[in-house]
Image 1 (tube, each protein chain N blue to C red):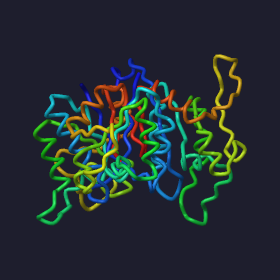
Image 2 (tube, chains in turn blue, red, orange):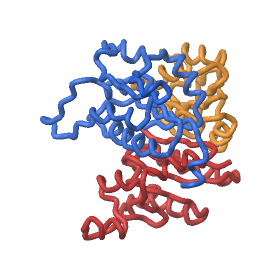
Image 3 (spheres, rainbow over the protein chains, first blue to last red):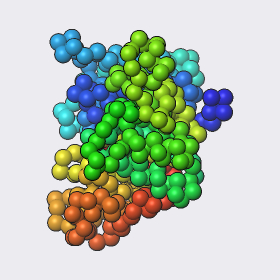
Image 4 (cartoon, chains in turn purple, yellow, green):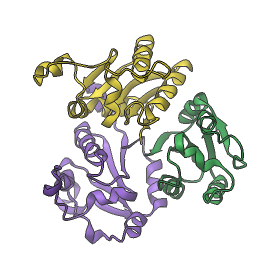
Length: 139
Length: 130
Length: 101
């Protein structure tokens, strides 16, 4: 662990699956929460059905599954500041940024100003960001 | 080169575990090092010794165990995913008051930090899943 | 930096290939494995987009998965076949790997 902490790598966690229908979204989020403790450079990407993970207004009481949508709002507290949403995936699903939860972080380099974590990017832009990563994890 | 491997699917249902096995075997034959194989999601089901596939089929679990033994592989099953799915070692059995354990030889149960650490320590991390 | 993308889904069933082709940068490589190998054939609705990708990327297919599925003929011109050893080499020749799960 002490060795590990000396290396900083760029990790991207890629989410392409919708929540609840399968467990991937939740278990992927569990990895991200643990990963945040490792002091690495973390970003998340939501592509294709993955964008459904971030929607507002999820209510799961009647299906009996744990509602984990609030956890995405806590990501800022874990110092996760880069959340990329692929533009076309939103558009083809008839969604806009307004349909997604408002995710923010506090920028310690800017007097703890609250800033948007979500960045809308094209597939090409996302592809370029992916190439900059050392480790890409998909679930 | 040093590899970290993530296996996200269980045996038989999906080819992911087979592909991961063939990849790891080939990487070892080529002289590469496998830093760790981490089993997550339904991938934890690769680590139960209670599977008994038909004689004419491959035994996915035994095959992983044998590869681990021959090459001293570190094969880690995620504890949170394992608890949900009933993959239990002696320690988990005692901690959770279960009446049996079922972990296969060569596997150990540990936390998700082991996956992140594999990403940090390996030169390449390769994910196999659905 | 160059990336190896692996696609293990039939393109007829999942957007993995389509999105991979949109994201993959010139100079990167794409490897079809498992059910992803169905995208490597001539005469499908995805043939043109794979040929487009071949203009500035390398495209590979895992031979054992092709063989298993009886898909050994009509490979798109320019796609190279690899075995598991070749798969391992591809991961070492690129800086990182993105599996389009």
